[in-house]
Length: 129
Image (tube, rainbow, N blue to C red; front, top):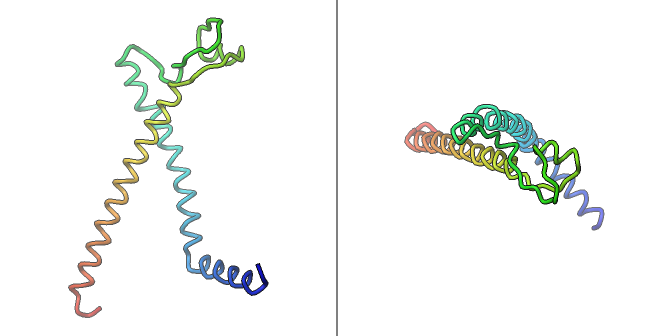
């Protein structure tokens, strides 16, 4: 890449950052990360315990398949021994968290789109704009 090409890329990046897009993106990442921890706690601490209780007092995070030949009384014991395991309970928690996050983001985008359509409709019907 020649010097003019590099200067053009840097100029384009500066315009991108100054317009606020980069700051908006960074804010979205930070909020998304915080939101993820809230959803993870909601799933682990609020949603999954009643579901586990309903199906027989099961803690989903402790569900696993032991791939080794020795028996272990718990997932923690299997991990301590270094046994190979498939931790499908942890995966179920993550999957439910993902689906819940997906649902909430869908609802959020739906509200944003509705507000945007209303604004566009109002702008189109307002003769002063």
